[in-house]
Length: 209
Image 1 (cartoon, one colour):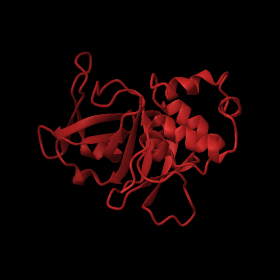
Image 2 (cartoon, one colour):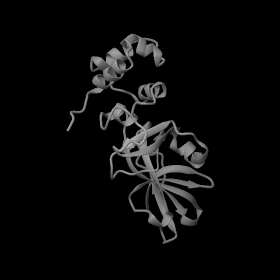
Image 3 (tube, rainbow, N blue to C red):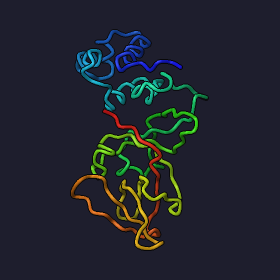
Image 4 (cartoon, rainbow, N blue to C red):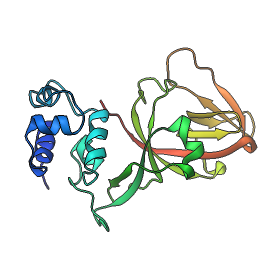
């Protein structure tokens, strides 16, 4: 098993592969100065999602999940057999999942075998408090409304709202109750199952600094 590289080692690997100096690499991806990267080298900062997006935008060969976590391999390759390629959308799930079929993906994230999902998107809401802080990467699978597992996290799309909440059984068999995890200001909601147009289960998530 390969040892997971730390944040700077992953940045350094890309810089060397691109055959650039650190300062030139920083300017190439749109940073004003190389100091942003040297802060990572000194251990003061991690690799933020915004930095990862900049790098993958300019170097789509780089695997986003590897860059953020060190898991997997550095490169995304066609016909990759290391796992399952999940379309990644650089968009807010609550604002964009309704029109997912019209969006162009920003690339793919490779997931290990056995961890399947349909889409990867960002969650910027505040309903879920510290459980899913704004900027969390969520991995989603579309399901049937009758396949809800009580207590699970779901993105619910109705004619009026799109929201990410924890779902529970409602007052009767034809309803579900949605709850938030934030401490204050978010009331429970009860929905009729027939009003749910689409529903996506949050299979797992990645909190990105």
